Amino acid sequence: MKKVIIISILMMSALLWGGNSIFSFDGYPIRYYGKDIYSLGMGDTGASDLFRFNGGYGNPAQASRSDKTIFGTGLIFGYTSYESEYQGVKRSFRDDALDFPYFSISAPFKKHRFGFQFSPFATGVVKNQFVRADSTLERQETQKYIYHADLIYSYNYRDLNLGISGNFFFGHDARTFEQFSDEYTVPTTESLKSSFKNPTITLGAIQTFHDHAFGVHGTMPVTLKGDTKRNSFHSSEDPVDYEYELPLMMTFSYTGLMHKELKVASDLSYEGYSETSEDLRDSWKLGVGLAYEPNVERKEHWWQKVPLRAGYAYRQLAFQSGGDDIDENSISAGLSIPLKNKINRVDLAFQYQSRGSLGTNQLRDKSYMMMFGFTGFDIITSAPDRTAPRDIPKAEELEQW
Image (cartoon, rainbow, N blue to C red; front, side, top):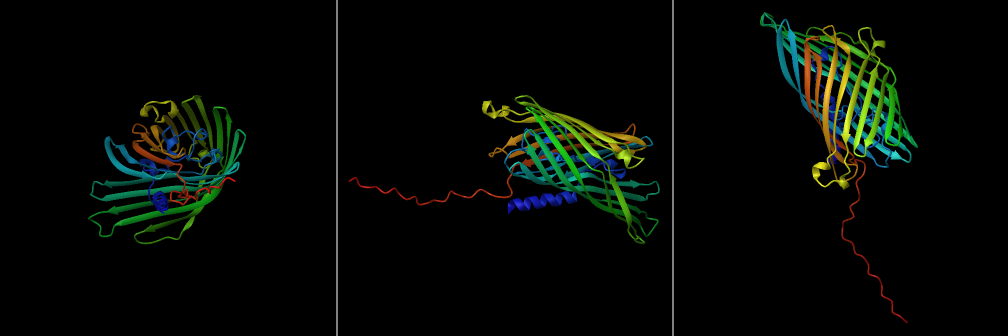
């Protein structure tokens, strides 16, 4: 029961919180690629990592080849620092952040695996307040979320993993503008709210060669459809049709055991947004990571038994701000705390991320995030309690004739 309550709280957190960025007025600056906390602490890499119990299934072929039921979830929290420069005047502000990156479960059936994953796809949350020269107060706010719920199937044939997932995308884009002034008794309030949804599919494959794994997966283009409605202090308009296009999205990945205790990974993700709008460019992200996975049975000291990892990622965003492109850089590091059960572990990570530039965009944000991930806890069944005392009958002694 306690596990169900905890999971419910985490699921509700996903609907209440999202990634914060000063560029949220221009698009969806925060993007998740279906990775778990282990991968996020390794440069957001590992879409082909079959050398561990993986809790992220952005690539549907990524389900583990073990016979274990694997559950994974996590939290990301910290703060984001905003900076702006307008007419030579610099301003800054710090905002708190809390996000729920994924909830996943994967269960085996012979060579098949069936799974489910709920995760944000892209988000953007920001509030802005400005006092004009005539003391008029203006407030702007935007909350943008796109989530996806995935039903996953994967099949293992020798050294080849194949996977397919049905992805149901849904989300909303809510924007609010308010203006207050002592000279006016009636404030100005306007809001524009859009909601949309639609399904698509993702196909994936991972081929292993001894200590090396090569992966590829792609999500088919889809147009999310819904409606948008404008409201103001004086009136409410009728809803009108609304569409948001998601392009073809591809990821190519590599994971290799370069040494018995050393693993490297690299992921390249591509999104063809230029096909959806002339105002957008194709977006891509490149990440590289390195992990130390010790053989604990051969280590004497506790600090030699701790798995460690680090990574770097560079990303080009699809939209512009201030008439210029936006680039993103991030570095991350993490470690794991193995628990009693072989597949149970806690992953910890830290990420520093910088997005935009004052010199080109007149805006910049920097994020400092702590991450906690949980993998391996069985929420379906519990082992029966066989510790109760029992009466064991004594063997009967037979007389010799």
